[in-house]
Length: 241
Image (cartoon, rainbow, N blue to C red; front, side, top):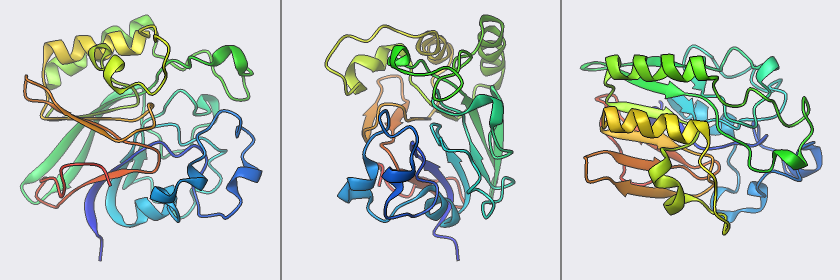
């Protein structure tokens, strides 16, 4: 029996299946959070979290070479690409640049609007084609199309890798000032055009919940954190687990 109907899953950074020494196998270990040493997520993996739910959406930075996804059905478990995903070699589990993923529920369906991408603030330390890709953010034409589609859809739920620009200073885990990316600016325009009920994102590696005055509950998911909904489309808890 599934424990959740829809599960939103935070950044994975290569921990797709359970392994005791994943750090030794991660080619990008210099740039990924040490989630394998975090007691709060000990024993977790993307595979385990996904298979405990009927449907799931992972918020990006799945990373790795995606060869370990064979037991996860892409018809039920999807991924929104982040800035640390290998864009030329994405598996069939990944959703597109932007659009709607519909999850069947008892009362019909839950339409989730998604947008991929973010900017790597450490790209100067990365190697193009190995752990950085120049199209990690949407192009100008794609951003225009995404905004237009969002305004038409007026979704109840949004899942993105990064967040609108007005939230960055509150959720960012770095001490230095962060320049707003094209993704932050796009997501801010979306939010200004329509405030959904729910907005989930990752990228910042912390659990954080903010009830916006306009009615949107923003939920930032830490690495391998999750948030569940039942078969009626209702949230199971009020914060990430």
